[in-house]
Length: 285
Image (cartoon, rainbow, N blue to C red):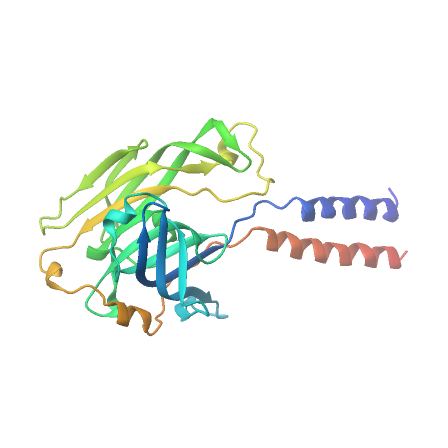
């Protein structure tokens, strides 16, 4: 095979790789602020004085993640579930994640608790816990994974038939259970008055695990809705919630978290390198 024909074949393969990336995600924006207005009739949830979460990536060491001021003084979006209007009141501190830009569609709303802004932790979540960058109170943590209904798929996502939920305490798994929609699990085995309750409301799962699933398709990431309630250990409950003023003026801190990135970037870079190599091959003939 001549070098010209070989080069054309390589070029075609690279072009296919560029126009058919492995996956793509819709932008998620996480903010922190205070609840300013609630309208359950219109399913509208407003947040005042939002600070946007973001990370920088130094050449060495862990990412540096902070909450920084935004141009907007207020954001409004739809709530992920009706229970958010019973959980939150105006003036409550909140961390929220929206899909497709700032505000418009909240996929997660988390309630904060702590004596100072720098040690604020989460007591309640309505939405997807995986989008919350702050820790649960009481040294608890959660891991979730959903199972798709392969007969109910659209593009890159399927309706989830169940979710495996792991509750961690001190970094160790203390309870694991498979929940179907509207099922609940409760852990209260630490003998310090604390507990964690998790309900799986509804969810989505990636379609790639189903027969015939195409890993090369582009589309939105799966989004699920959970209800999480953590009762703090005895003694913690005597602390006051974070006030609206301190949340809005918080000094950023480092959080060792790496947000999800689009998988299209490595492919584009690889394609660019390959194109340069092919062009050089043609010139050398």
